[in-house]
Structure formats: structure tokens, C-alpha cells
Length: 411
Image (cartoon, rainbow, N blue to C red; front, side, top):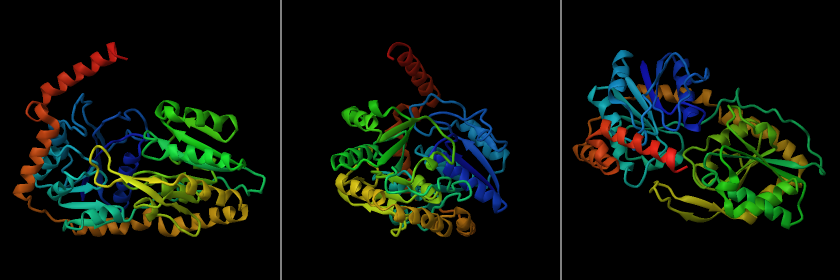
């Protein structure tokens, strides 16, 4: 089967999801073509991403998230004789309708949906849900397929096998990425301060971030400096390709407020790091409670963009207590590091799950679009895109002009 994947395509979690789908589908004998939609940036010229089967969307100054140039996109569909298209986090609905109009199967990788848009996914022929939480939100769709997520256990494997002694510092690794707030980086910092208050000093937190934490959390500037000065915190800033920096840690601490999947949780476990996560789906779906820890939620809040699931806030004292469990029990930590890798090999190997993808493709059928849903799709697109919907070329030019002026005069 000739399958297209419409996705962001550079060093980012969503792109790694698409890459994993691509490699799995290729191993099943399918021809896979990538349409690099763009967004924050392109990875043109980077050998890891600039592959022969990749077509790059035009760089668009657009007010519309996940915008696509229609002419180039439809030429790509025709030239490669695409039979099915997988959309990864597509928020602009018109491209899905363009594909449907060509009688090509449409598949949505489920990650982002709001209270308003959840029912609009009825326009897709099939939905791929990689977590139980997503599957529960789309039980009503007769094309919903639950495909449990996993990771590349050959790429993500243990490197840090040092045996800890009581006097050694236990290193807690945390990935803050581009959105430290969503990933609970502030909770990690506050938990570190709580440990110091309790007189616990034989620990270190390593945070890998792609943004400036001091600017992101100005209210925590004093806490961050305190942890650094006491040797309890190291911040690594920059973009690092997979398998990343998991080897720097003994335990992965990830009290995330909200996740679509929680890719780094499976990756860390595969690297032999027991994890501390929020006791909320989907974060707690991956963990082995014999080696890992879950931290209870004290509060839930809806996000401003109306995302379907609420954010979860953990208890800081309980978070710090979970850290102490590994700090004061080096024998348990060492055993957990070995056992969590075994758990990942048995339960989180995405290569073992690929049979589920083929089963899903075998069930693929063209669904008729409900007229009411189609009308709602157009209504939503018009609401969020305003004049762009009617005049895309002019809107892009005006938006590009405004961006240029902003960069030149309002830095």
C-alpha cells in the first residue's frame, strides 16, 4: 500500500512519532511518503530528516496552524499515487477534506483535540489511538483503533550502569523540552528545594531544556540559583538527537501536567531508568509499579485552548518523598534499573506492536461524511481562520508582512 504521512518533520516528539510509524510501515512492506508540513521549522539539509521520500511543504507565513499549500499537496498525492494518508496533529481541517474528495483513505493519529473539535474526527475513516485515554474519548467512532504505544528499544538502551553507594548522589533526569510548564519542570525544581529543606543533599537534578528556565519561570529564579549553588541542579540547554541524554540520570522524574502520549516515559524506561510520573492517564499507563513511582494529583484545571483533558497538578511533598525512596535505597535503585529495562523489552517494544498496525490497515474502509459534521468542520475552520479561509494567498502575504515588521521594529 502507498501511504502518506502529513506531519511536522524535525527534532521534535511529534516527528519521532511519525518516523516510528514510517519505519514500522516500511518493515511491513508498505511504501511510505512524508509530506513535511512545516510549522516551527524545517529540517531541510539535515541528513537524518531530509530523506528521498520526503516532500517539503512551501514555507508559509500563515495565521493558521498546520497550514498546507493546496496545489503542492495535491500534486504530491497524485504523483505518488497515495492510497491512504495519516495526519499527525492536523488542526486545519480543509486538507483532510481535500484527501477525502480524492477518494483516498484518511487516518488521524490522535493527540490534539478540544471540547469543540472532538466530534469532528468523524470525518476520518480511521483513528489511531496510542493510549487508553485517547481510545476512551473516541469509543463512539467505528474506525477507532487502539494501538498501544512503545518505543525503539534498540535505540533507547541503558548506558549508565554505575552501582550506587549510600554516599553517592542519585541523579534525577528531567526533560523540559520546549514547554517546561506542561512538563512540570517547576514541580521538579520545587521538589528539589523541598529535599534541601529536609536536609537531604545526596541528590542531583539534571534538566534538559530547549528554552531558558530563568525566563520561563521568573518566580523560581531564587530556587533555581539556590539549587545550582548547592550543586543540586544542572541545566543543559539545547537540542539533542535521540537517544538523548537519559544516560546522565539514574531516575527519570516527569511530573507532567498533560501528555498526548508521554514519549519520554517509555524512552526513559527503555534506557533503564525507573520513572516518577503523575498518577494520571496517559502518564501512568506505561509504568511498572514494582520499579517506578506515581505521584497523586491535588488539582485539575482546564487549559485555556479548551484541550479535551484537564491539566493535573501533583503534590510537591509526595513528589519529593518519591525521590527519597531512590536516594536512600541504593540496592533497590540498582535492582529497579535492571528490572525496568526488562519490563520495557517485554511491554514497550514498538516493534512487537507492529502487527496491530497491519490489522488496523486491513480493517480500513471509506466512511461517508455526516453532512452535519461536514458543515461543522467548515464552520470551525471559518471561525478560527476568519478571512484566511476565503483569501488564503492574500492572508499569508499580509501575515508575512506583519511578522517582518514585528521582527524589525519590535524585538
